[in-house]
Amino acid sequence: MTTPKPVRSVLLDPIRHHTAAFDCGNASLDHWITHFADHSRRSRTANTYVFAEQGRVIAYFALTPHATGRDEVEHRVGRGSPSLIPSYLVAKFAVTRSHQDRGVGSALLLDALTRVVAVSDVAPGRLVSVDAVDEAAAQFYEHFGFVRGRGSSLTLHMKMSTAIRLIAG
Image (cartoon, rainbow, N blue to C red; front, side):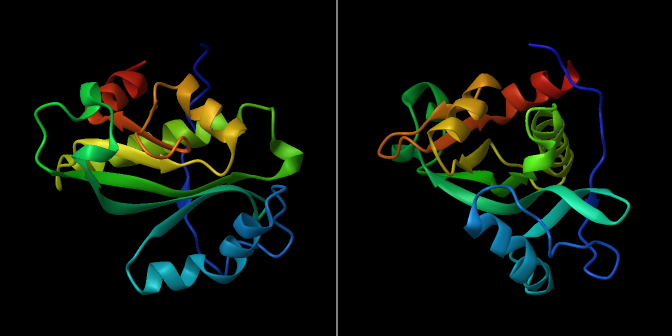
């Protein structure tokens, strides 16, 4: 696996960042960035970070604190954890069609993990979780070391220790 060059996302600013033309090929993700991302920030339920070119959002992810049931993860992931595992959820993750298959998704995921690892020093969490939108997305996450959970083949988890090793290179 080649590691993409580090890129740093910025917090979505609806005045500076244009989202109306965002098209990742998934209508619900397109709609979310346009209609709900800023509301989620203001209501303190999730922060959305973007990659933008000339003010136009080309990729984004949303992060939120989370709790994962130990019975939802594979034993090797949840071993030694309390029944509710402190976690972080990559709640949304999308790249515009025009930037797909160009390494932007990999850079976006590494940026998200870098942010999660940094905040875990202040508010510890043991896992990073994702809800993949489809099988192709699940395979993308598996490529980086996420492990499918029990009960849902599209929910995946990564130990924080794995995230730390991954971003360290």
